[in-house]
Image 1 (cartoon, rainbow, N blue to C red):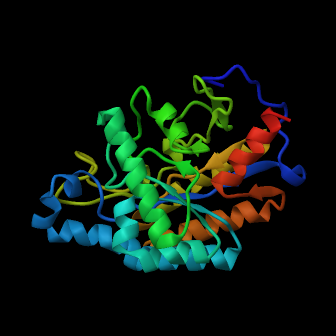
Image 2 (cartoon, rainbow, N blue to C red):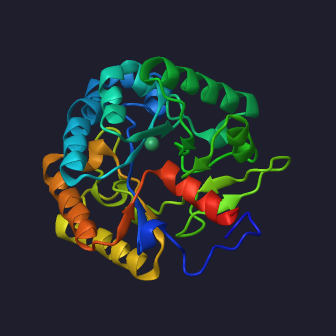
Length: 286
Ligand SMILES: [Zn+2]
């Protein structure tokens, strides 16, 4: 349990005596990222459409699937996506899901100064408030890493939890100097990142040197086994899925099967990340 002296209860107690926690989470990046930040995306229309597909086409389909299965989820959304497609993002909230911080243009937080990180958080908050009427409590770093003082700056910005690190397969607490309340970390894993098996694009080439995607049966089997292990050991699973990657027609069938497999277990606590964070804090500070 890195960053904290607290020890988690053993076995972990989940609400209602559930076997494990599943916090489905999606990063709705749209066309944000390096190409948007440096402006090169405007010379690469096809790459822009790949990002636009995320919000226009994949998101509504994914929201329908979640509604059909009665599952809650958390969407980490860059501020730029919210202000560019407010109606589509409002649908996330209207369907009962959580929206949370993911940078403004998907900046690499580890490359930003303290003040630059503060500005990204403040601008994002304003956008979430103005367009969605929401004050987010969660954050996922857009770049897979953060700067030395990021955790402190998140706490300063009123953030309750992060889902950015990799240090456990349960939530854990990150103590913040000078603050009573620690930051809850709900760690994800690359095995449950759909980019690792299903992303493929040209110009820019990704993944470099690996000109194929994984078989869908193999991908489903990997994800299913990660869930089965999580359930057997009573842990917490979150996903790093992206609508533009796994919200395509064939991949959506994988998600449908995966969600059904999880629901068939009959004893899983499906929750938004914020609920997991609140539960974890309450358990750590009874
Ligand atoms: Zn992202």
